[in-house]
View 1 (cartoon, rainbow, N blue to C red):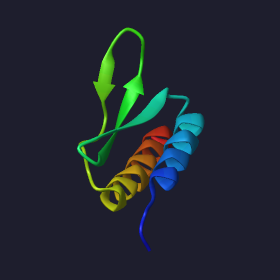
View 2 (view 1 turned 135 degrees about the vertical axis):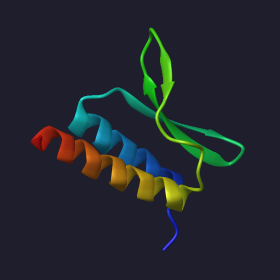
View 3 (view 1 turned 120 degrees about the horizontal axis):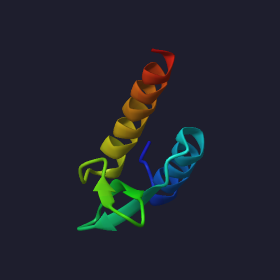
Length: 71
């Protein structure tokens, strides 16, 4: 099943709420990227990827963040 822009936006919003990080998604060249929406510094978190690969990245980031909280 194809991953849509709205799927990515929803996943990023949920991840932002869960982590407490000000995460945003931005599209350029037809590919999304996740970044920290910090007024002091713009920080890219993910590379630009096709939507399906970015969803995989979001899942991996979530698992890693959860693992880090347990340590």
